[in-house]
Image (cartoon, rainbow, N blue to C red; front, top):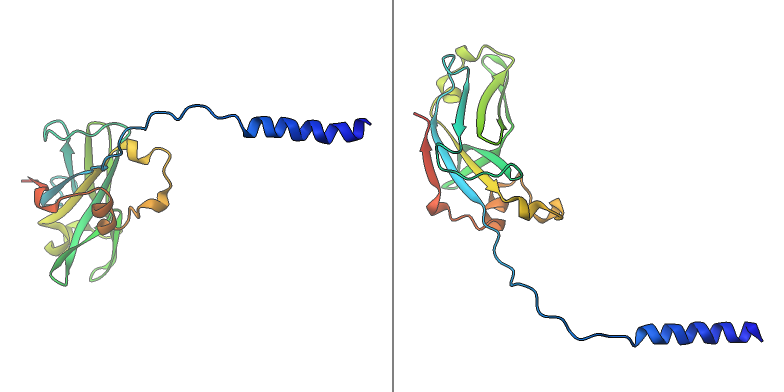
Length: 179
């Protein structure tokens, strides 16, 4: 008799929990656009005098960057079809004269960021195309966006994808001169 009663008891308990519903809750807050901050650093010269680097202090430039925010840096590489083509840092170039490799890279602290050049060649012997009048686009991504999100939502290596996802209005990008 217990064998017949056990399935009926389980069915009754299951039906009890299926029918339990409470009142509908209030709607959640309206979702908003995630806005990234972008600015250009223009006229960056890499020389022996500045140790082939440029440092930007966020507070001096009145740029808010929280310790948990992500900072992405893209280098203006060339024009493609009338549009500026940006490449993400680190960016490596393979040289033929002189033979070697140079890399543009950056690091960031809570207070500042540094963009620098490195390589296995004498940087002082490079053509000025590589060392003078460089331009970088910096994008600050709010930490709230990155929490609990899959990286598949945005390709951070694609400048075009980042601009689209973070609603960056390129006409409002602040320009900061390195000189």
